[in-house]
Image (cartoon, rainbow, N blue to C red; front, side):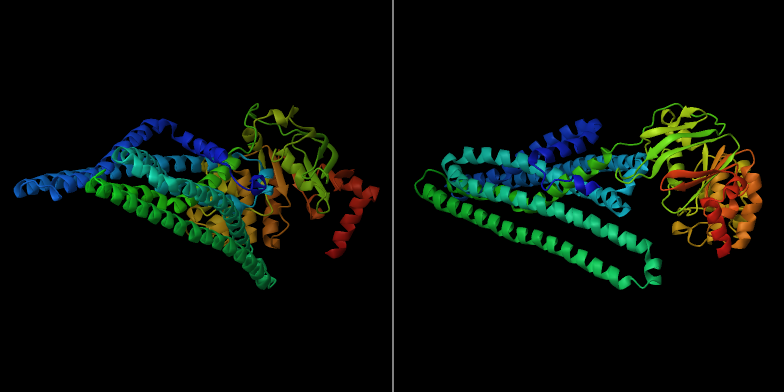
Length: 590
């Protein structure tokens, strides 16, 4: 799982590593970044110049012995220069913010696209260990955190760093002695920043973990709300949610306490620095070592110096959140995708062979143990057995939804590991018992946005008998389905599943008990279509109702991942073994 790979705290080197990876998405915007950085330096120079104009006005015209008119003219001139520089700084700030934000939003957009694309390329096994709610949090919340980093921190942080460097130079130029007296407070301020950063990183990581856990819990409960209501389990789930919510509240309060400690501490250091300036600077003014204008200049510079430091706590929070978000996003992007290379399958005959296939989701719990069979083109194979015997796993391995480690699976005599995954899967039409419908039109749910001719679509609807679903609504194929297509009955959903599988006219059909959960009328319609659907196609049927597989060419009875019986229905009934007992047991129940 994603959070299992996260360390307790990101080091500065690790944070910089992830920030470099994020910024690498803006390689083609390097000239814009360079221009913005140069503009930030100019803006810092302009802002540092403003207090100097004020100091000049004090020394040259306010406390000087110059003539009255000359003093007024001089102050008027400085005032106009000051106003011009303020307007220039405002325009530069607007352009710099726009430039930095444009680059930042472009980076976030690209990352979000890469994530969405990469998630579709990951193997199914990845999603078995990572809840959907947690992944949604990654794509939505963590990219949002990076967006906040670019828009709220990066531009200001770079400008502030450049401004701090210019300010320190200006302070030393104005009065080296006064500057050194102020810098006495730098070590405790730096120590406080380091301690805050460490505590803040740890708390933010915990907040992110608990938020993802909370989102996953909410999503799962909303998806299973009808089940919870049916079994009156709402109170139990509410208790679990209250516990998780309290834990999240506790960690958020720890962050509040950190702010309550850090901000007053920095405020105290700022006030002490101002006291030192007034004390030492006042003595220097009295002794004639510096002018009154220089002291005022120092006070303004000190305010400018501590202004970004006052926001340091909030920026630390966003920085650490962004570093953690970047780490988690790159953990997804660094996950090994399904292999895309291989030989394309242009046209399959539908011959399938399993050779001594072993498989396990958990190394300690084997699912398939030495499964072997041959299915010739056009033949029908039924897989029967109790729940957990490995029936669905056989079909999943055939589609390369999970990597095969031991044994061989051949399509038309070629190991499927040598075939291109996408072209391999196009050879199969999958008829699912539990059909997933998207919030889209009925047409798009049948075609899944694939380019399908109207003739092929009409033929698939006719053969599958799904045309009755289309004709039941005035909008026909343009009928909009809601979330998960809940307005369709189970029988209608099954007919749509048939049509979806047939629309590409695949040479192989995989049917996961297509008639297990539908009414008798719809089952009759499907049974009528099956003869036409299966004609000339290889088919694998995962069967629960044994009455639907009596005419299959081969039946495999699986038990704990092993083939314990094989043959036709007649042959297995004559053997009077486990299969015959299953048939009799089902007949007794009916």
